[in-house]
Length: 249
Image 1 (cartoon, rainbow, N blue to C red):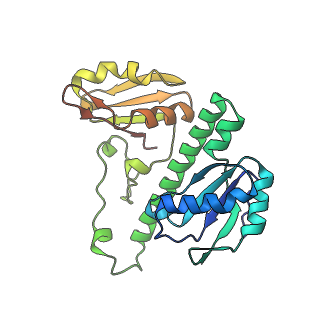
Image 2: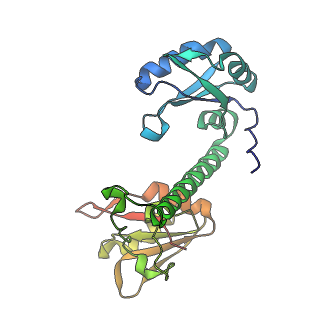
Image 3: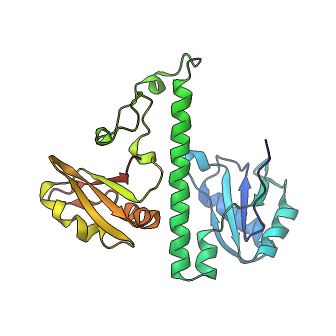
């Protein structure tokens, strides 16, 4: 199998193998003190979620500073662990904000969110494959429980053979959104709500089915922006929360 090419030089350094028990504030302070010797630091990102623990991103003002930091800090011990450094795979939000205009930043954000959704979809699909392998025995009770098909999945069966269904939340981006949990009196307002986003085409209600609708855009970019800005929106006097996902293909 061919090895993946390393990311091209850029102003963001990806740091891994950090001590996971250190609190983010203390970690960022230590990274700031260590890396500021190599150039101007625009931002430091150290996330607290389980999958991102032990990792951080150092955003420098220029590529040369990032290059120098990687060369000189590689393998340096911080809190008893040797850091592993590399260029980040993509430009950081802080870099794009600094070097581009508002349109560049919005485009960068849409691409990042699309990649995030695609990664979630791929991980969910892989998990389903592992659970369905006939040789896998003795899986924990939580993983062995049957997967509940999401509401609305029956509108378009993409799996007549009965394969595992990927949850709505992990479907990859496409041009059409699936909106659920709508109060009847607010269906007519969907065009005003979703029409604010780039490339809006139409809202399609489903005859005989209340509480759901499809919203179509000219491209994935418009759908991604709309989903990120409307998911979890509360409508009506009772604050009914709508669910917005991508249409199942």
